[in-house]
Amino acid sequence: MSAVDKKLQDLGITLPTPAAPVANYVPFVRTGNLIVISGQLCLGLDGKLSDGHKGKLGAEITPEVGQEAARLCAINLLAQLKAAVGDLDKVVRCVRLGGFINAVPTFAGLAPVMNGASDLMVEVLGDAGRHARSTVGVAELPLDACVEVEGMFEVK
View 1 (tube, rainbow, N blue to C red):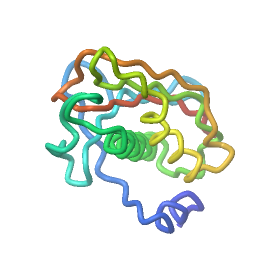
View 2: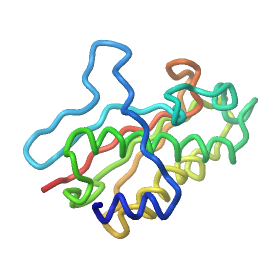
View 3: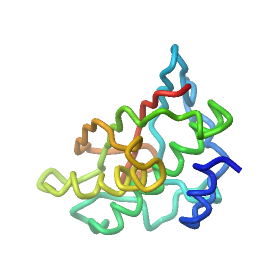
């Protein structure tokens, strides 16, 4: 078992089957030592978006639920990353995360919501999980998901 897989196990995290693309794109692209992963929704282990993760931050979704959704997005990023490289111990570092928060125009708490994804990367990858990041509020996301996260990783 790889060190990263052991860490996931210790945290009680099971990686889901990576989600298939829902439109005309691929789930990840490798260029040299970089893996760019398409935006991942807050799908559960069953591959479905729960009703509790549908809607807008600042309306029907609380910041705490949004943070939980961002964490799920990060778990789905790791599932795609494992599909891309086979062994998560090949990850040199998480380079960048981009977060999209489905929010009402007046919701200003975007950064703490996105910390759900950022914190998970550091929990799982240690210092290699520290990354650059952008977080933006958006008017709508696919399937009315409350959060979507994309990522870029350096690998061996």
